[in-house]
Every structure is written in structure tokens, then in C-alpha cells.
Image 1: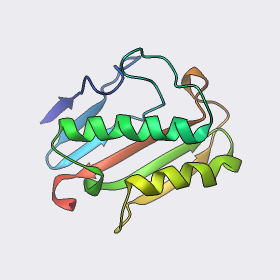
Image 2: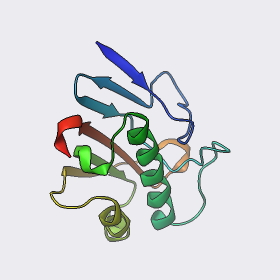
Image 3: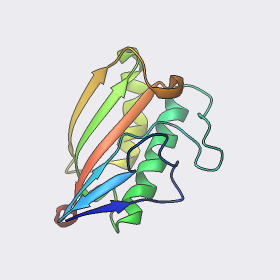
Image 4: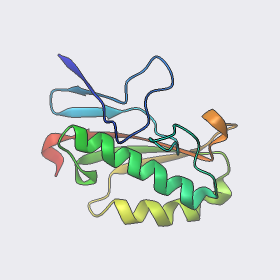
Length: 128
């Protein structure tokens, strides 16, 4: 049975989707963009500040299901410019530790609200 997971510490869904869905020991998190959960506005700045906000949002959703980044088994990173990979990766490395989750990174033509980065994660309760 699936269970909706949400956190007031992360931005509200801006469409017909949930912040995350838990099924068994798995958590499927919707992609997070750098929206401030207090204002629901895009965080200004470069990809570094935007990735920081994205990771904070992911942390809040994971926490709402009793998880941390240690539970994450797969991530998908969407960037509007792969030239920003290094800056994104520097922030990403502060949140994810060994053993690192599997990861895909994709350059896309655009992201919601003009974001430069979006990250989605899948986590498992027994992975930490």
C-alpha cells in the first residue's frame, strides 16, 4: 500500500504530485527544485546556492519518513547546463557519503520556474 509523505519544511507540490510516496521500505521522492519552503519562490543565485536549497528540501522530505541521506540508493540530477556539474557536485558531496548512491546526471533544455538544477531520489529504509 502506498503512503503519501510530506513535510512543511519542503516546498508544497506545485502540481498534481506528492513530495514523496512510500511503498514498503522504499521512498520515491519527487524531483526537488530550489524553492524556499517559506515563500515557495525560487532561490536566487548560482547553481551552488540552488543545489544547497535542493538538498535541504530533499533532507526535509527524507526526514518526514524517518530517513536521512544515508538511506538514498539512487539519485537523478537534472542540470540546464553540464558546465555547472562541478559546482553542483561540490555541494552534492557534502550531503552524500560512502557508500554513495547510484547517480545519473542529465542536461535538460529547461526546468520548472527557471531553476538550474533539480534532483530526485529513491531511498530504502534498510539501506542505512
